[in-house]
Amino acid sequence: MTDKTDDLLPEAVHHLTYRACRENITRLVTSDPSVTDLLVPACPGWSVRDLVGHLVEVCRMAVDEDPGEISEPPAPPPGIPLAELLTTWAELDEELPRVLPGMDWLRRRVLPLDALSHELDIRAALGMPLPDRHPALPDALDLAVMGFTLSLDGHGLSALRVETPDRVWSAGQGEPAVTLSGESPEIFRALTGRRTVRQLGELSWSAAPASWLPAFTWGPFAPPPHPVEGAAATGPVLP
Image (tube, rainbow, N blue to C red; front, side):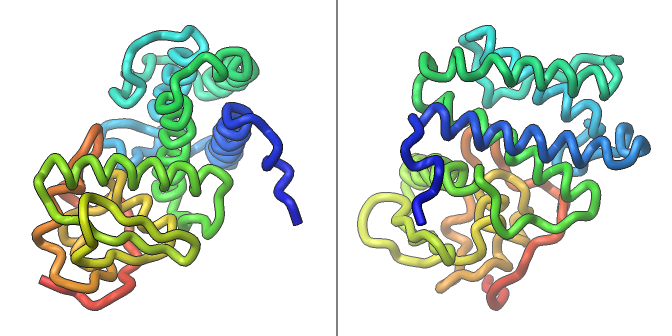
């Protein structure tokens, strides 16, 4: 069976995955009025409302074709009610098909990666498990592995193999010396600053992971000092 997005232009696919994140987040944060002020551990100091405000500002930057880096999170606007933020976000989302074709490929892919990452932050804050499948996850994970590869090179570390049930990547230069494996959502969270150093070490590694742990600090991401959600330990704890 052919996926209905196969014949769409790449920017259309990125908009569909971004919109899926926005719609999921809208459902999550309107499920209970009390979640508005709930703190989001993965975004220290931010409530659910603050995080939605951040996402609105990121979308506004894209629509306005602002040259600023969307990987540097703009501060959420203070005092705007959650319902108003969600309405503004939906209106801005309608404008994305107009501007996406003119975006560079990296910015176009970072937009849904950021939205997915924060959707999972909100799910964690609400005590919900990571979804097994998500339309934004394949490309977001591919982009995260790309950034991780640059980090490995920048740290002068040897290559490693990243394996999920659906994909295999060789990250870094040369023959991989170790394999990191796990479910796609877990690997994505590990690569995007949502796992502590200890949690990273508790993932499924084919050898002791200590040498590669510095590479998990890259771009806007770094292992948090304290757990922001539970990790799925998929292998023995290695030093």
